[in-house]
Image 1 (spheres, rainbow, N blue to C red):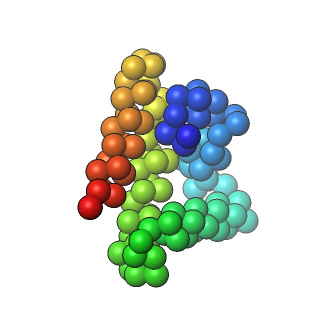
Image 2 (cartoon, one colour; image 1 turned 135 degrees about the vertical axis):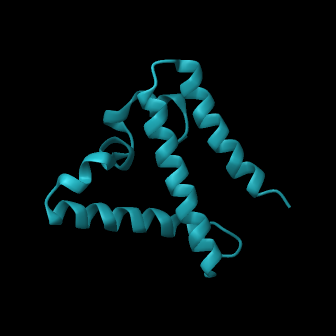
Amino acid sequence: AYLSRAHAENAEMGCPLAALGSETHRQAPEVRRVFTIHIKEMIDLFARQLPNWGQPEAHAQAMATVCAMIGATILARAVDEPALSDALCAATLAQFQDTNQP
């Protein structure tokens, strides 16, 4: 759902990390602290879903996943071609599926 067209097309109803991430560094320290906490919580949520949860590599994989998802969403929202927007999200999602194969 995160990498869906609906999420990419509805920034006002979607993830604030993807919508406001590039502006956060200009905000007050309190705003940045809340943003940091939210990112860490999201990474931890993803890490807990991995079979190697509790290991350093699970944390690193979760960080990469969060970065890829947010980055793909930012780019999908930025381009003016719906097909490219869909392709960016699909390619990112395919990378996650490929890494979870035995």
